[in-house]
Image (cartoon, rainbow, N blue to C red):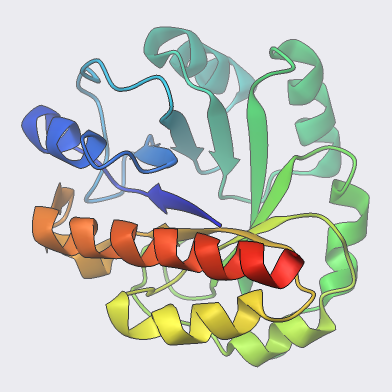
Length: 217
């Protein structure tokens, strides 16, 4: 299981978190976000994939950020259509991952995912709330039992250290949980991560990898 630490904002803090070697690091390019990023990303270890997070951005805006920041993944957090994703996929390098986000509540219809399976590399499930993301709460993960796809997914929404036991339980199922996406529960303030908490979640994520590998064997 992979770890994505999202909502990075300050260069020194980015370097500190980068030293922990998360698999993904997220930068939010939505201006209404308290974690909006418009600076420069310092040099990071090559193993860390830089993710640009977008909310209903134009394709030109996304392409510009891919080039400017050398992004390895893009996360679409708005109401982007299948056609939008397909057209964007044709315009970017095949190595750049597309993560399509869906906001989930108890009544979420997983049939909505089917048309997107061929136009994205991963789904990301976040908690449905007032904001496109960053609401700081978990949804009822039992709804994932209805997940009908083999497409790997990121799990997001209010994940902290106390949720890791529940993450481990998901790993014991047949669900294709690929990564967890953490943010607000690891912050001193919006965009500024607590390094000790990030170190702890990195340790726990590595333990989850060990558990996941044992289960698959």
